[in-house]
Amino acid sequence: MDFDHPAQISAAFLMSAAREKFAAPEGGAADDRCILMFDLYIKARSFSLINKVFFWLSLLAGICVLAWPAFSVVAASAGSEGVTLLESTVVQTSVTALAALCFAVYSHYKKRQAAVETLMRTVLLSGRSADELLPEVVEELQRLDMGFAFKPATGRGK
Image 1 (spheres, rainbow, N blue to C red):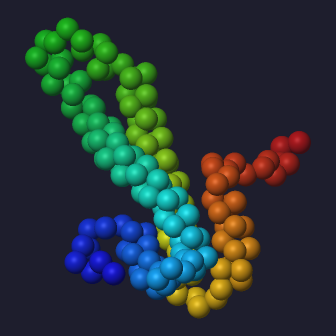
Image 2: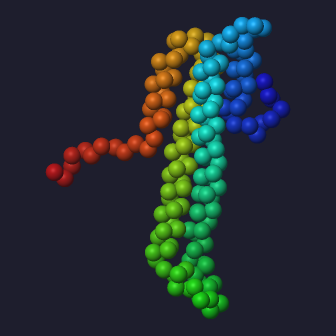
Image 3: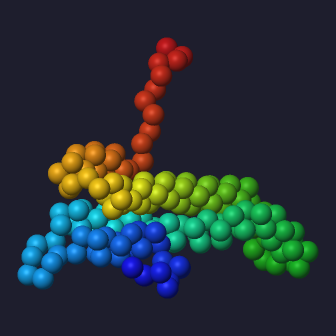
C-alpha cells in the first residue's frame, strides 16, 4: 500500500490496498473482487477529474460574482469604453447563473465520487465474496449512472 503519498484520492489508495489483498498468486487468476475494485476505481477517477475541474471553475466564478459590482464601478470611474457591458444586468445575471451551474455540477459529481469510494470500501473490507457483493454494487452503480435526477411533479396546483 502507498502510505507515503497522502495527496492521492481515496480511490487510488483503496485500489492499491485491493491489489495487495486480492492479488493473483503466481500463475493464478485475480480475485473477482479486484476486478470489481478496478471497475469502481475507473469511475471514481473520472468523477474526481470532473470534481477538480468544476471546483476551480466554481471558485473562479464565485470570485467573479462577488467582484463584478466592483469591476463595473472601477471601469466607470476609469472612463473605459466597455462600461455598459460591465454594468449590464444581463451580464451580471449570466455570470451568477454560470457560477451556480459550476457549483451544482461540482456538488453532483462529488456526491457520486463519495458513493463510489464507499462501494470500494465495502468491497475491500467487508470480507464477502464477489458473488455476494455484485448485486449490491451493480444496483448502486445503476443509480449513480442515471445522471441528474429531477423529482416528479407532486400534482399540486391541478
